[in-house]
Length: 466
Image (cartoon, rainbow, N blue to C red):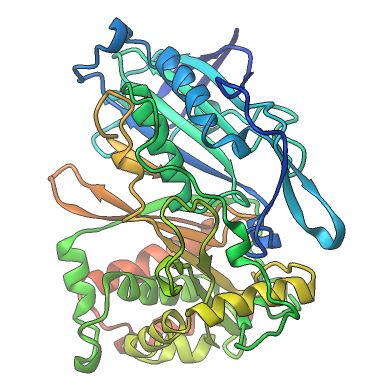
């Protein structure tokens, strides 16, 4: 047993972990090799992504009279892995950096834990950053590598109140948010007594492979090799994590900056434009340097016919908007908004095939991260809907912002209900401390209706980085 006392400014509690174990499929599964797609195995997805769900002890759960979430979920994982057996395997790398799953049946890593804290002690509003995350989702030594290690790590932590926390770490090459939720939903269904998941998994990764011969037919500035000549990749020391809530009143306040011809823009497009602009101002790039925003766009519906129901691989693109820091920050918000809308509209079936071809032709490169902001909308992914028998999650979704092969670049848009009962979106942002202060100030001024172009200070802070 491993007792760890952790604290934050608001909260102090002890987490006691049992020794990590492997959960194998409940029945024998095929021993085979399954290749990932040419979208899955790109460099920018070769990292572990953390997810966390919080559950109350307020259910009528009674299957078999078992009220221990650890026992229920462990059994359900083993049963679910019979169907999702590639998750129980290990990744190998072949020629030309091609990734494949060796379906060994070894299992996923599981950690059982107890914490002497109640759900209520986490506060009225559960949102990233979470105190003591590294203890609620423990990176078991030797398990973190992308190759040859467990593809999933799951920790279930019982709370003093009878609630529990389900935390998960996914090797992102295996699945996107929709695919992961499909797996988690299946575990929930098995935990509640099902014998077969309602959606059966479909591999079919070859649908997102390159053509023969490969041919890049679209423009993909997201994979441009951009030299970091001025040290503008975010430093990892002194990083601050903070979440921002956008409910009806906040979104309405920001919509006042939209010109009439763009009034039908989505909330995602609006928030992306605002956050990109505020973030750029806060980081103080050289005015003539190019800045970028990558919008993750789900491409499942772009295919004809659509990808099969049950597909759980990565099926999204990183379309990019590019401009200079000066143009982004000196122009009205409509300028950024039009760039974001154009980038999103670029994604088609042909675009996805072109990306797969580029991966094969250029050695599976990482998307560009120099002066880049990446946003991913998981408001419809369904993390919070996952039910292991204790009802829906109080919070369900990404465990923090800034995750990725290059930390500090990404933000997620997460569905959230605040303490006033307002439904909205919470966005975790990760920035250096100096930049976070400026970011908060810029965003607050927009939410108050102050036109940033009316304030000479707004652009004065954009100056060459020292």
